[in-house]
Every structure is written in C-alpha cells, then in structure tokens.
Length: 474
Image 1 (cartoon, helix red, strand yellow):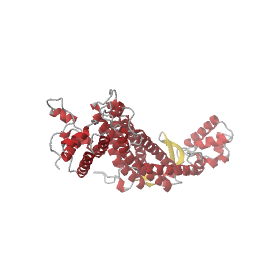
Image 2 (cartoon, helix red, strand yellow):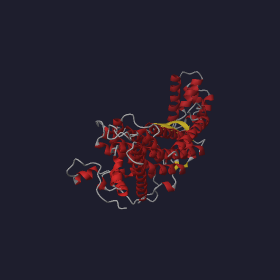
Image 3 (tube, helix red, strand yellow):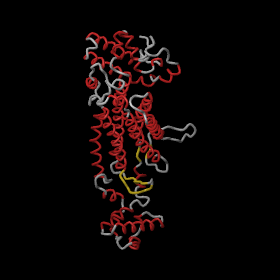
Image 4 (cartoon, helix red, strand yellow):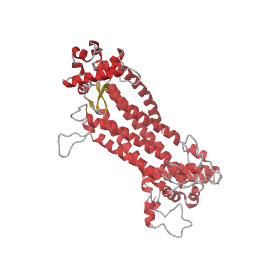
C-alpha cells in the first residue's frame, strides 16, 4: 500500500492556512522517531480496547480496528509503509496508515481520549526499557569476558598503581575484577531505573486526563507497565527525568569503559608490554606497516565523550521548562537514541577485544615489586612488632632512600644495611619482602590475596547470573 496517500495532521481545525514549509521542516521528527512505530502501534491496540470498554467502539469496530493495526504493523515491519517528512512525526504517519487501511470513519475514532503528549511519554519509556535490557545484557557479556580473564590468570601479580606510579603489588585478577564491580553498578543502575520507569503516562491526555471514562490502569497493564499508571497526569506528560537518568547511566557506562580502555592503551605500549591485542580487534596504519593500533579502546574513549555530551545537552534542554508539555521536548529523543546506538555497537567490539587479548605474565611479574612497591609491607611488618605507624612509615621511607641511592630494590638491601637504618629491622623482615607474601597477607574482604579474590569471583558470578536473567526478560 502506498505511503503517500493524502495529508493527515493531528491538529489544524482552527487554522486557515499552513503550516509554512519552513515550519514543517523545523517541526519534523519522523526521521528519528520512526523507531518508536512498533510501540505506537502497541499503544493504539491498548487504547482501542479501553475505548471499547468505555462504549466508544463496538465489538465489530474493535475487531476491524485491530485488524487494521495488525496489517499496519506488518507493513511497517517489512518496510512497505514508512513515515515521511510530510507526516511530521511517527504518530501522524501511523494515523495516516491506519486511515488508509480501515477508512477515516473508523480510523478517526482512535484519536479520542489521547494526545501526542501522553503517547510519546509512554512510547519513549517502552523503547528505553527494552534497550536498557539490551545494554544490560551486553554489559553482562563484557563482565563475563573480564571474569574469564581473571579466572585464566588467578595467580599473576602486577604492579598496582596510584597516580599511575607503582604503589603495591596486586593480583591481575584483583585489578580486572575492580572493573567488573564498576560495571555491576552500571547494570544495577539500569535495573533500578527500569523499576522507577515502569509507570505508564497513557491516559494523561494533553495534560489533564480524559472525560471519556477511559481506564489508564488497563492500558498500563496491557503495555507491560508493572506499577500501573502515573499518579498525576501533568507530571506524566511533562516529566523527562527518566530520560535524563537514562542518559546519565549510559554516560557513566561510557566513562567506565573509557577507564578500562585507557589502561589497555597504556598496557599495549612497548614500554609496558603487559598485554597484546588480537589481530582481529586491532587496526594498522596506512603509512607505517609495523603499527598495531588499539582502535576499539580509543573509540571507547571518544564515544564516552559523545555520551557525556548527550547528557549535558539534554539537561540544558530540560532546564527551566514550565509545566506541562513544551515542544522543546522534541529534542529529548535524539541524544538518548544516539547513546543507545553507540553502546550497542561499542560493547560487543569491546568485549571481543577483552576476551581475546594475551596477558604477558612475565612482564607483569617482573614489574610487580619494582618502584619500591614493598615499602608498605616493611611499615606494616614493623607495626606488627609494636612500632608506632608514624615511626614505621619513616623507617620504611629511609629504606627506600637507601635502596634508591644505590640503584637497588628493597629486597637487595643487606641485613647490615637494614640494621643500620633501624634496630627494629631484623633479618625477619625479609619474610615480607617478596610479592607472594605481600599478596597473601592482604586477605581481608575485598583484598588482593588469592583467597579474597576467590570470594570476589564467586560473588560476581552470582550477581552476573541475576543480571543475565533480568536482561533476557524482554
């Protein structure tokens, strides 16, 4: 069926002319809101049912209406019906499509008791709720890859850093699981956001509800909103905090990916040589044949900035809008649509990069004790001997100074040198001047000891199982 039969507008009765071509071009949103078409049709089915329940559609009319919507849905799915710029938005395009299929007398009844204001507020929630689960599932797959890295290298030591300087030895698995934890919070934010967003604005009308005796709770149930309909119709049509919160969550995911990406970029340099990227997840140079570039990681950094920009622009749009609906809110969709699109293409590539990288165990373990990273172990060993930490800290610092002056590491100092620095530094201190001992000693909850990391792994796997289950309920 043709998609260009006639001009349909959802407004205009009091207008003698127009809209001007310039206004029509400015107002058009169908080029980006067409992705909401399946949700719009689902809303129309539910709305037809409450019109029937209120006595405004006969049983025969309801059946013919649903048949027309079914055909329209099929035509949208296969591309034989599409919206055009002349339609202004997806709602107008789909009304045109319905009128073409069931005629203006029956099709014209569907508009009663609803507004584009409550429609878009509902459809937008439905769309983002579905994509929250898609993104949540992709995050879980990335976490699975990171957990796989941790499990494949349970005893590999590496230099832990603060300020990008050597700090203390840690297990590589411990470091990787730190990123899993931050992604777990992102996934939890998505689940909590979904819980708050499971409320339907359908039935709010333009802002004041409807006098037609419709049933917003029935529509909410029909459309899968577990917490029913909104408690205030003005808030239902005007609020976009659910969009802003979603934009923040996606930006935060981008930031957390960017932090991992930065480490991969650094670790992949010749100077670090901690990891080697798989050829399938790297790119080359157009002029330098030796290059193997971490483009996925670099694109993750770039896209994180893009998603932060989406959030910032959206917040600026929402600032100072009076109640209820304002046309400014047409600008609320493209930023989060873009953030969804970026994450849904970035996360699979990022997961592939992490799942296939090679860890250079020898290089990591070579540098784990470097940079005097066992100094804290000296200080804490002294504390166990009854030395106040203030004094222990100073003594450990003197050990560092002595080793640095001779170009040595701490465990290269002789017993005499230790004794000269402090009488408390007996030969027994050597028990903590090795990486395995330093790691094993930090066995409290959340620590870097192998036993503590094993607990972290078990807890993460339990959380991931629940996350996968939530993401798959679409």
